[in-house]
Amino acid sequence: MRFILLALVALVLPAHAEDLSAKAWLENMSRALNQEQFKMSVIHLQADHIRPMVYLHGKVNGQEVAFLEHLNGPTKNAVRIGNTVTFIEHDQPAISINADRIQGLWPAIFAGNIAELESGYQFVLGGRSRIAGRPGQLIRFIPTDAHRYPLQVWLDMDTFLPLRYELLTDEKELLEQIMVVELIVLQEPAALLVEAAKQEWPPVVNQLDRHDGQNWNFSWLPQGYRIVARDHHRLMGSQEAVEYVALTDGIASISVYVGRAGSVPMPEELMTRNGLGLVTEKVGNAEVVAVGRVPMATLSRIIRSLTLDNPS
Image (tube, rainbow, N blue to C red; front, side, top):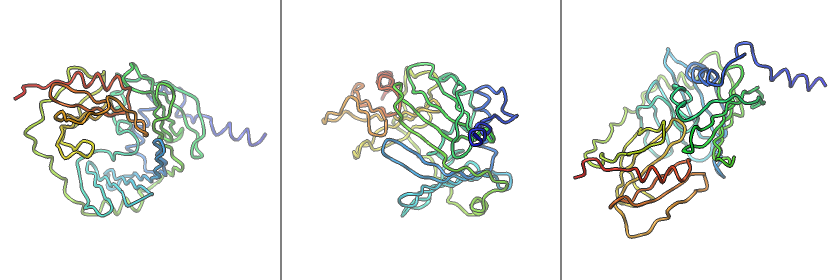
């Protein structure tokens, strides 16, 4: 009986969290990810891929400093000092880019403006459960249309930091999960972050000066989706350059590749082991591939809305 009572007490909301709406919980999460000093030990699960990681965040001389370390395999780390992220990998020179978040953990929007997600999702309070020894509040993200998948996140009731994240299909199949196994709130920045702030990191790489392939646009995108990057990539090991356009609604990311139609037929659609949907279609003389953890019909409609402005 004593054990049951203790478990119930552990799930009681702290006074500062009483009567909060789902959106207010998420806004507090955003502030916590920017302001709190902490260490997280995390498991990232995608299909049969399991990645243990450690994430540190703090402030050194008033500036945000963060560190992400992948614990398995060759060295793969990332350090953020303010708005500069440096990638450190085994047998590769360190590279720095302009970015306000380290990609590969929580969606970047979790530390940004939560209101940007409202055009694509409704926020709904769920139940409470214990994660990493801490009581957590469940927030569900319900899509407002059929062009994205539902997700859910559990927030620490004390700090509002995320403890668990799950992306699901409409059939409740798990596509991705991020789970904290240990959360330590720090009163001072971790020594590693202090040392990182003192280091001389490589200068930020310049963006490529692109003179071609910039005219591809979309006559239709789902509500809330926007273009966030354009570049040149190699598609599926091909030596032929293709145009790359990145889309996101803040949670879901879609990659669109445009290249010359080849003689080798490609599958019209494919769901990979890690939940990525892949659709290939021809648009004029171009072959277009769209990849993302969104419904296949969405990828297909995005491809068909592709247009070439002022073609030469």
